[in-house]
Length: 188
Length: 198
Image 1 (cartoon, chains in turn purple, green):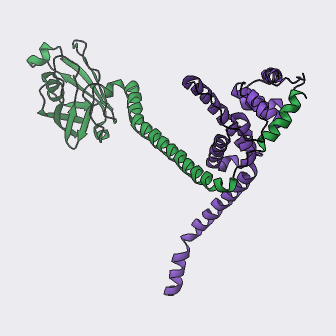
Image 2 (cartoon, helix red, strand yellow; image 1 turned 180 degrees about the vertical axis):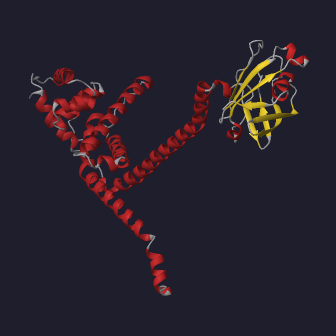
Image 3 (cartoon, rainbow over the protein chains, first blue to last red; image 1 turned 135 degrees about the horizontal axis):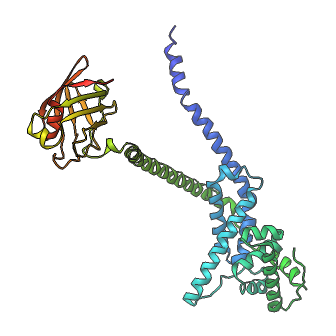
């Protein structure tokens, strides 16, 4: 027996919307998971990048770029145990790459004017760190600010563990000389 | 103070000066992230389409190359498209008498064997007195028309094909010339009927 006209029209109207609603829910879930991670990690990642670049605005932009990459890979990375570590790694690599480019540009343009650092910052420490290559700076930040173990620092920067230890030691000695502070021997 | 302690305290203090407005920047991250994801997917699709196109173009050429390597006789010289050639497929023989000038002059008198294969390729076995190139030959059957490029590599024949009308009665196969400028081919196919060997 054929369906009454009214009932047929309901069937026709609701059927195509079901998959869209289901997909919309998935996207919404994904976005809300991403938003939670963003809220928790954007500030710490920006701070870590700032300690490498010493430029607040640039640090936020690079952290943002890292999160944009995270979003575009979110379907895969969200299944990782620590998606936050993934975005940090991306941000640090972007920061080191950016700083290397900037150093070259500063030499070429003879314009090494650093960005203004916030007043509450340890200006002497940051100024001394600027004397170090960007990757050394990143190693110091990851180990002494993020408290990452040597092996993880080595992994992000593409160094061996022993090379990382040696470079951290050299960086601390250089800073010790610039800041006239004593240098300990233990690393890791 | 040690450098290590200075690093820990100084970095912590310096970092705390950075207070980004994450709430303001989140929508931009999602919008640009979506755009980036779409661009990445589009590049995958373009790559996949390009790969399929390459496969589509390369496959017939590779297949053709393999066929040329495996069946050189069928693929050299003027090529003939495959057709319903199985209708005439088989092995045939004929004995050419030294009656005509063409047969005598070219040493064609004697027993010839013709093998027509269902895939359109053919082989010819000539009497010992015939010296000519019988490689790379093929045929095609369309209705009662039999087209062949036999002797195509022989300098005595032009690089073209001959067309014959064919008729088989019992074990006898007869070719009647329709058009053929090659005298050798015309003499071979139409002087005497061919008889089925098997």
